Image (tube, rainbow, N blue to C red; front, side, top):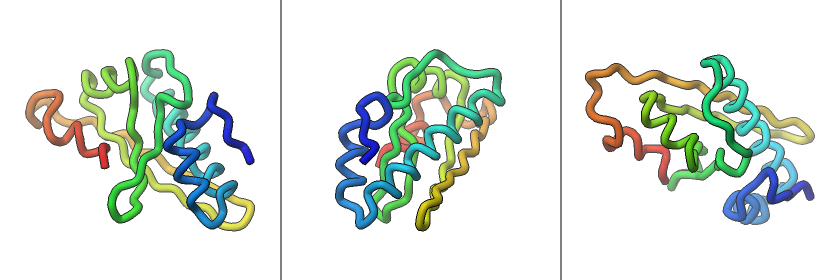
Length: 120
């Protein structure tokens, strides 16, 4: 099983171990992280980061969300960016789509409830 600490957090590994197809779940998480990095590069990139700083968490109904850590999280708040994520996997294939949304300046202060929505 691909469960390197260089790629995944312990929480991500535990989540995937609990799933019927742990390898497919890990592939989906990897696809999500890669999709985020590519979406971020379309903005000119953010601060230096590692894959564990881009953590996939799941809400109460299982919906995937990205939880950013460290300088990357601070950068996202400062630039008022929301992150939407969709992951799909079946058989040997996994894919993910990340959409970065810029909030308007009049949408409340940074650190508002909207910033916390990626926390399950």
